Image (cartoon, rainbow, N blue to C red; front, side):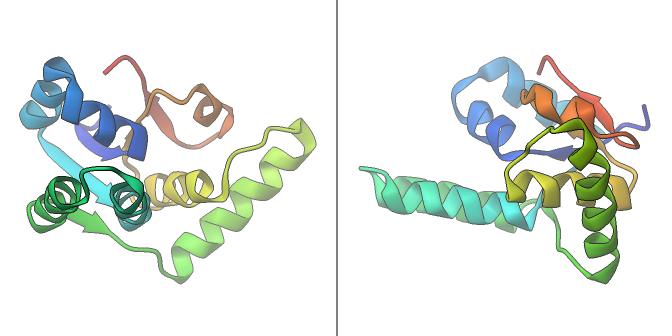
Length: 129
């Protein structure tokens, strides 16, 4: 464990509601947010009943976080991960594959409560936040 974490979308949402998760994020040495998660959060905000509050919340996260974006190296990792999962019949949503690719590319521990990420060799998955 290197103390550098990439948060998946579910953990970010959980941090809005759970003080323990929020505290762990606040006390972590380095936190990164995938741009894909921001897109998912903005999508959720657009579909919510309280759009303004939720858009403001996501905007605050984007302004105060280390955001990771996909590039050609991320795409390479995506291809490797997706190909490695095919024989195991493990299915992850495309956005989750991109998030895992960023974790692998940048050698970050992926904080998630989605157990399917465990099937991906080459990334460290942190559960229980």
